[in-house]
Amino acid sequence: MTGERRPTRHIVVMGVSGAGKTTVARGISELTGLRFAEADEFHPEANVARMRAGIPLDDADRWPWLRDLASWMAARHVEGVSTVLACSALKRSYRDVLRQGPPDVEFVHLDGSAKLIRDRMTRRTDHYMSAGLLDSQRAILEHLGLEESGMVLEVALSPDELVAAVVARLGLPPATPATHPATGRSGPRARSGLGQPGGASA
Image (cartoon, rainbow, N blue to C red; front, side, top):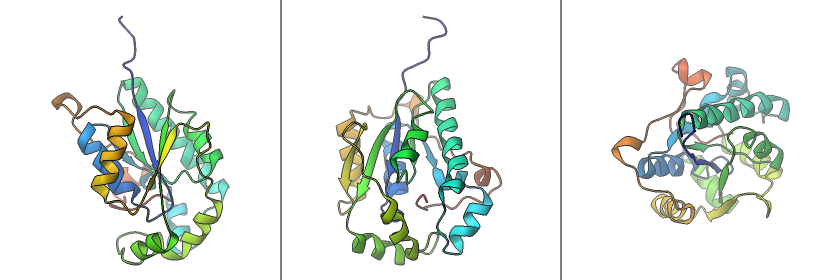
């Protein structure tokens, strides 16, 4: 019928910094053609400065950022474009804001031992989120509720195994020439050329 929106899927790969959200979300995008976005690149410079200084963000810092992410997914839905977003989404209230965007959001929580994730973070040199902020993120993490649409995967698996598990369990079709993986990074820092490639979301 003329004017009907195409069905879309909207996946949020969530978890604490260092869990591998960006790598897995990019892998899903490459296999399926879902439009990829990195939530870090929607942060205003004030938030980035706080995190660079090792200062955890509070909820007042996060609400506008989360609303921007929800609006980005909603806009892609209107365009008939499916998305995969790398975003920490640590609290239920944060995920509730993201769910206010498109009609349905599915979450993939990458979870695992603090030691493994901390080891990964100490080896990173290209991201402003320090390993010292991991404890603050784990302290506020609220696991997916039974009524929330999503799954939990162990970060000890390889990125390829994690991507394959998501694609299989969510029944995501493979990419076609019409759905080639395009990056959807359109946050304020991305537009100004200040995005942080390979980072994990705060």
